[in-house]
Amino acid sequence: MKKFLYLPHLFSLVLLWGLSCTLGYAQLKIEIIGSGANQIPIVITPFKDENTLPQSVTAVVAADLQRSGLFKLVDSGGLTTIPVEPSQVDYAMWRTRGADVLAIGAVSLLPNGQFDVRFRLMDILKQQQLKGFSYQVSAQQLRRTAHKIADVIYEALTGDIGMFNTNIAYIIKNGSRYELKVADVDGYGARTILASNESIISPAWSPDGTRLAYVSFEKKKAIIYVQSLETGGRSVIANFKGSNSAPTWSPDGKRLAIVLSKDGSSQIYLVNPDSGGLMRLSTSGAIDTEPNFSPDGQSILFTSDRGGSPQIYRMPVSGGSAERLTFDGTYNVTPRFAPDGKSFVFVQRNGGHFNIATQDFVSRQSQLLTEGSLDESPCFSPNGRVILYATNEGGHGILATVSSDGRERTRISVEVGDVFEPAWGSLIKN
Amino acid sequence: MKKLTLLVLVVVSGVLAGCACPPPKSQPVAAEQPKVEPAPTPAPAPAVVAPAPAPDPLLTKRNIYYDFDSSVLKDEYKAIVKAHAKNLTDNPSLKVTVQGNCDERGGREYNLALGQRRADSVKRMMMLLGAKESQIETVSFGLEKPRAPGHNEEARAENRRSDIVYQGE
Image (cartoon, rainbow over all chains, first blue to last red; front, side, top):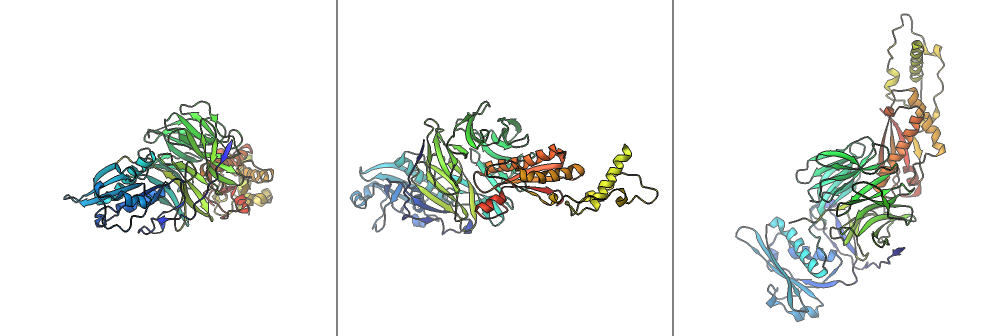
């Protein structure tokens, strides 16, 4: 029942950005290695007076759209005047350049020191405006504003929710040093949340994006912590004998599902991250691990080897019997719900390889999306369109994305060291 | 009866003092004096009481290896676990940590659980053979601390392992 997608890679299209900035070796480098078959040709003209800004807005917008793999950027060079108003747009000229849509805009400094950024998205074929917005922002908010504009364009033209204003967490290992980092989804603004000489795994974003749960081995064993990104303060969530691991948040942020081996085998428990109150959820004698809440908070996906090999199961969050979901192969682990709750992503062993696959809850069909040798730790983007995962290239850990239809791909690496255990944060509300 | 116990303790400490077997370095056990009333006259020489048995060479072996995705204790390693279990049973003040490890393949969290089960299965067998639960701690490093850095089967086989580590080592 397995459908293997043949994925033609567009290796000719290799673009780099995010390199020229000042953050040194730890900066993530994102390259597009495969794009959608039907890219939307868009032209983004420089916004008027944008060159006076400390941060180019349109460069960020263009990079966001291009990274999604769904857009083809049409050259905007050689203009004698930059159009700002719809009346100034030479639609015929853009049509001959092959563009279907056009983004125009202007920036001005306000008396209060803030910037007014306004833009319009124009349909070149219909010669009409699709969207128009203006923002009053500080210099520090310019990147974020650019991501918002990219979101507006993306949403208007694809119908999906934009996700350019999100964060990712990941671990970088360099020599014997491990760092838990958080960065903008385009790799900018990386900052270290925790540095350690022992491994850190399983970072998990709280639904409101203010806290990270993770497992640190800094005390020579697996202990679960929750850390505030605002204050940096952290608390121990579980430090029982044996292993304490695999934290995951309930959608309302009020509970964590965690895995403890204190009572025998590794089992799933629920705990309140603020007040404790441990409650055992699974009761098998086997390994039960990697819990993940459904978007409605009613059920939990997890990995168990109760049937003799690790497979994916689902159980009600109130407890009770579990239903086995995977039957292909002898090794299926790391299940994560899609944001719409209709499918899940997981890691499947194929011969000697470990790859990312998705499975639909209704049809039970699974779809293999990657063909690396050691692909692991998949998670969905908040809009469900992209899967972020860790893989191995030339003995080094890198991150990669693949769209949930398998077409668009990027690879995300660091110049020195290994990067692994990615976690995509939820959409940031303003 | 009480005298017999005391005598056994003296013998044990004597055996340990003269024993080259692990745990060799910084083991406080041998130095510890059981609460024996000081002998008024020259203390009995341990050699007179009993000849020290040769240390079990299996005690120098600390690694137990596994198949992929398995925590089954293979027959060839049972004798090692048995020897350490006896060492713990004979020396109640000794403590060990059993550290479970896995190779690089598969999920990190599943491997953490698997490494824990590898370590716990060693602990269980030691307890069945007489060691006390308080003497054995188990931890798992999953695939996080590979001893062999390579990515071939040889390295992976080396990393699918439980280590028996004596406290103080």
